[in-house]
Image (cartoon, rainbow over all chains, first blue to last red; front, side, top):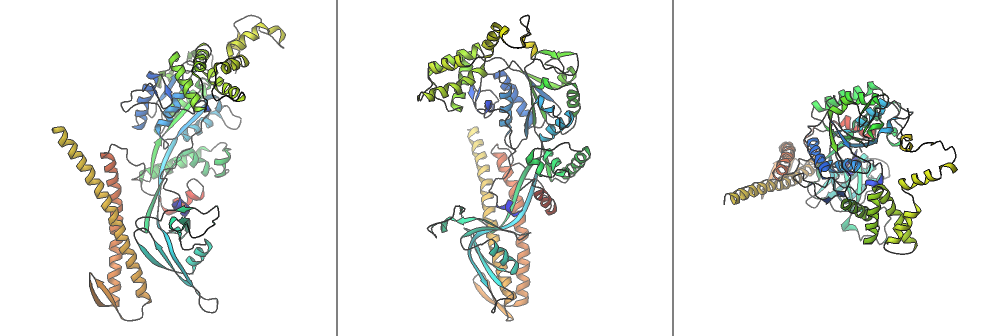
Length: 468
Length: 130
């Protein structure tokens, strides 16, 4: 508890963001101005203006808490920035809003049922804000005096002098305080905090004023400023925790270590109910605030009919997070049924959604994105190499072109060049096939491969459909 | 012209509030200083053996009865605690008002009621907060 008081001024603990792929690490936000108008190139975002503007409106609704119980669908071809927009939205929401990112296929695990996985994802996306408060005494030690009664044993008395930049005062100490001071090896020049409720002492470091006391100091010597203001302070720390974290801690069989091992298993519904009622009680007393966050499900067409109907119901609950789904499918079969539906999502759920389309990038935008990725990957690229890459991106795919950046820069490094030239790009283009050329190659030589059973032509992509 | 007066009015209100916040913080420091001095005095009175003690009131030094001095100091301590606490809670409201004037979002969780000691202990022991 006192260690908390010692923690630096970080008031709100951030929620760890899990980034699924590094492909979007260059995204810092949605790139909108104050009027929610998208800037052409900003915060790593390029083009896709309509979708970004739509995402900006959604962002505003989330901030005002108006969107609970609804969902957003980002629909568009592969490589049109659906995940990028979701990432940008998460960044723009700030570190305090829980954002969970998962792929649709993550729910198919052997350890837990599909609905359990979804429930956990939903509860990971709901945060509660709580505050703890403590009275502490914080100051730089001017002097510690310990007097021992003559003849060894007997009661000891001591005096501790503390100061801040504004005041200085003496404290008389009893045996217990002396003991803990000696245990912490507190000496003049240390900056310490004492928790008033528990009496726990915490060493923050040594004062800068005493930095020259010794010629040699250990590595662990940390220098801090002499505290300002009053000696007896009130320390308030606001924590944001997700409902899932509270669930895990209270599910007795696992304990809090499960938080770190990631092995949480299934959580009993009674525990969830208990926690819900406790949180409701806290909210009633003004001790907790609910923060509905965002749950992002990529490849949403991988969910099956059970998940969709579960989501349908879960969105009704009053503390539901905003669910953002992304899919690159057109009219396709809903998993687990024989019915076809737009985006592979049942019509009743689709009806609840706000659908945001993304469109393919133009050549100019592709060049801009490749340029940003070059910067992100610390890769100097010559102008004509970038033009060639843009050409590759328009003809094959953006993802393939982005992969060429890294490989080309490695080739350039091999020949000890500082800049990636056109030749490097050409070389890796011939070394690594894109999906189209690979397919062509396979078609040409299919007889020489094993188990070739593609008798006709044009059946290729269908085989990739995941069977039940 | 109208715009100018409006801007001026706005700036005055912001500065006034900011100044109030700063002076409140200063006030808390001064009160805490007095609180610590009183505490030291009370401590010394416990240890003292004589029946009367010297008390400074402003610049006047007065010899005063020990018992009533103690009572005076204790009453002062109580009042100081109350004053510091009211200043602190008012400070929160003022900070949020100032942020509102400056078009900033309120500090998250500032107005929350703190968890009780027992609850914080349970939460920190379970590793949820640290």
